[in-house]
Image (tube, rainbow, N blue to C red; front, side, top):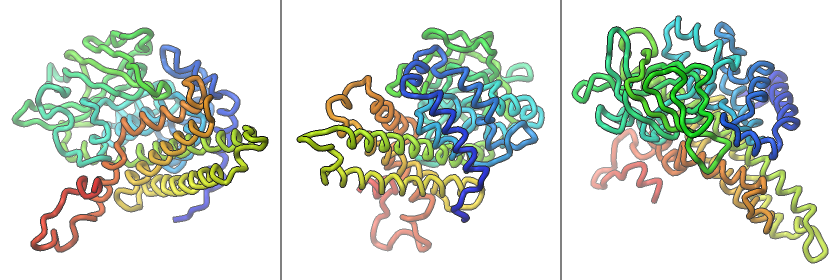
Length: 427
């Protein structure tokens, strides 16, 4: 592994940081999240059109930049530093990789260039709030996480050469504005059920301006923007009532191909989210250090007190460790690395962001406890990211299972029962 970044990678970081410093301050973030879209469309158009942000990890043949997960992670670190509200993760780390992996040549040519330039945004729709499980981050994704052919999931049935989807899903990232929905659904009924991925195209008018949206001409689709703690990560609830859809890929597809593609996408998404959390933690720590240098108590800056210095030093060490883990996970997602690296990096980054955000609130004193202060942008991001793709102990348990930490080559120790990985980690 070459730990040094190239000049091109440094340039991606510098350019993005300069732009976000000018256009994405705390006040701008708070204004953007209160729009119907939940983000600044003009800024997103500039990030996508001028910098090609959503196409960083897509091949040049499909309108992308032709880079990889490392460049996407570096970009996400900068967007995390600004707590940028945008559909970047949903489009570049969830929808686009699945279309690239499983889509037919026609589907790739029709969708990927538009996603790469920001003309369209996309997301992954998973029922039951099981996004982390579907991406194989908190457990194997070969089970019935998509409904298992029963109520509570999303069902697919063939109709007149096409497909119809019926069901509902919540906690869908950027689900109220995405024009390309990659939907995980069960086909074959209860007895022969298998999980497949489908594409639902939504028109440009599909933005939920109020509480609900009729799907912009898609019959049977109802999208509701949900009220969430972290407004910078907009989520939606989708209800599908016989919604026309197209199977992702040629033929009927197989469970193994879908689960493998979802697991590979999970590695990229975890690396990107880990880098984003590291960027947010870095910005929160920098703001805190600047504050303790200025805030005076007993006639001297509180940053001169040894107890405060120790707390900040501990956070700095944790932050650097999380950054190294996130960079390794991004490199590992490029094709050569250890299993579970992405899940471990995400766990460490989320835990670090939570610790930094808590200390940021504490060390800002009385003003830090007010919801209006920017410290809570980081606090809310830390809390909601763990709810979306965690919890941390399950991410670590999954990494331990993949590494065979609790099942050696000789199997369980004779005469001693083997504890499940999740229980062992919790203990």
